[in-house]
Structures are given as C-alpha cells and as structure tokens.
Image (cartoon, rainbow, N blue to C red; front, top):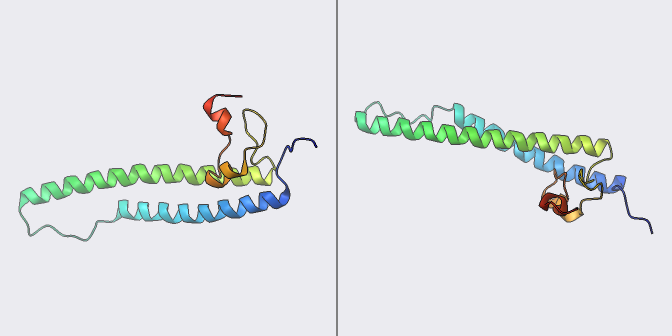
Amino acid sequence: MAEKTRYSDEELAEFKELILQKLETAKKEYDELRASMNNTDGNEITDTSPTFKALEEGANTMSKEEDGRLAQRQLQFIQHLQAALVRIENKTYGICRETGKLIPKERLRAVPHATLSIDAKKGKK
C-alpha cells in the first residue's frame, strides 16, 4: 500500500473542530489579558502613604508589562491557529514543510498548528 500523502476530508474536519475549539478559548484568554492591561484595577490607594502608593504603582506597571507579553504570545498562537485553518481549507494541513511527509495525528492533536514533524524539528530528515 502506498504511503498516505495527505489526511482525508473526514480527518481534516476532525482537526478543524479541534482548532476551532482552541481558537475560541485562545481568543477569550486574549480578550481577558487585554482587559486586565486596560483596567485601572479599581483599588484606590489615594488615602494611603506615598511609599505604599509608589510600590503599588511599580507592581501594577510590572503586571501590565507581563500581561502585555502574555497577550502578544496569545495573539501569535491565534494567528498560528488561523493559518492552520487555511491549510485545512487548502488540504495541505498536517504535511511537514521540511520532509513533505504527514505529521503524526498525535502530534497534531497536541500541537494543532504544527508545521514540522518531530524528526524535522530535531533536525533529522
């Protein structure tokens, strides 16, 4: 039997459903991160000592910077998932861009936006 060169339409539909679920979750998390960056927190510290206020503002700035980094990573993840959906539509999903062979289903279930097989990622062909 010849080696399979692409996933069937049924298999692609299964992966599409998985990606859409992950995409929905990722977008919610991204929206929450953006909201936390833009939120003024509501914890007023105007009636406390100036030292505490400075410490609180410093911690708040660090927290917003971390949220910004997390939001950026989440946005990249969303973009990778969207690109995977395009590959599904083009019927090129699950094909390793280095070896041209199918990426195992187990890897795609764990990392649905993967474009490299484990061997290609490790530098083996």
